[in-house]
Image (cartoon, rainbow over the protein chains, first blue to last red):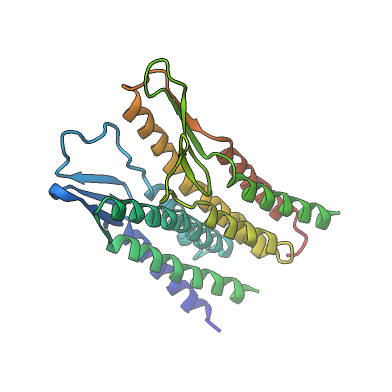
Length: 143
Length: 146
């Protein structure tokens, strides 16, 4: 049984890890000619963009829903239900990102590109799981 | 009465969420050449199609949605689980919405020169999914187990 101080510490660790993920690369794909597509929480950077690169930017702000869940986790220090909402909400958001990562990896390999997972995604996944353990423990403690 | 209403709303939320995965989340209708018929680029929870061709690596958004719908259903027994399921469904929907919003604008900008009359936008799936989130939170409010 995890006590409340440990549960709060886990939530805090989840928040710090998830917040760190907001500034690190999530994943990248390198193609021939030195072209590299780096996906982050706040958009996509294309390095050595060739002249025939499509117009428009596929550059979602994945960070927006994650910031909301991080704020809920922080509120969870005082409001138990907010911790649960933040942790499970973040788990759902990570589920969508996971589906995208698998898809992007498939596209990259099909086009002979090198796909790599970045530290940002690792921090996000670990932060989400750590925060979830803390949030669930807080609920059990309150029950 | 509240129990019945809670069960019905949770069931409806789960069915709506799973049903949404089979509907289009985003659609692009484009004429690749003047005089040609429109070709549809459609993303759903289980596939991405461009005309008759299927993207073999299309994102399977349906998986996290179905998982969260299952949590919502388990919430029939426990209010906290229902709340967690509703929150999880909201997280899935929020991230999917952010992705689709950008993907639609990307498709529009990237193809407007090919067909200035192209149509790009959200499909019915995302609206049904948002409705599922509302239903799930509604069910939590009336859930008797506290």
